Length: 239
Image (cartoon, rainbow, N blue to C red; front, side, top):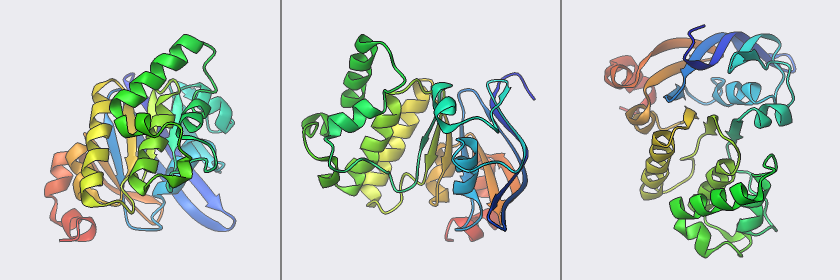
């Protein structure tokens, strides 16, 4: 493994019951990069993220995060190491306020001053959340809920952020805003592994892309090269 890789996956296999979801995948995320995972529905993209974050057990292979194999670690332990997963469908806590949702993201923090600083940073990036901090999170629009899910992740000590379909179901103008925020977080030093159905947008952001097909990586390369690859364009960019 190269020393600048914050995450290296080696020969990873995962099952859902008898379904062989991941069939020996290898991928690497270097510190400071945005890496995107592309593929059609059912290719194994979400399963990859869930396996990395400990939500689905790995049947075989290694998940090396910051030099340690975390394949058998608990989801809580993985979060405490700085690997944070924003799942598909946002999964905010309805019935709790926007502020309470954000506070739940900081459960690993012991320092109250740091918690306050993080909250201010989230409100600076997402002014709409500041305006609605006392509102029930369930009353937010889809785009606002996505912002809240990302903001909640930002409350933790993030070193690697896993984002699963952040643009799903959102209006194009909101998608542009979410992608702009992802780029800003990366510029602030957060390494990102992005699963995204909208390949065109993902490859504009990504340093590196991997294409998954039925649990196997069938192609990889830098974002610009993949964007110009005709087979990718036809299969995933809707051209």
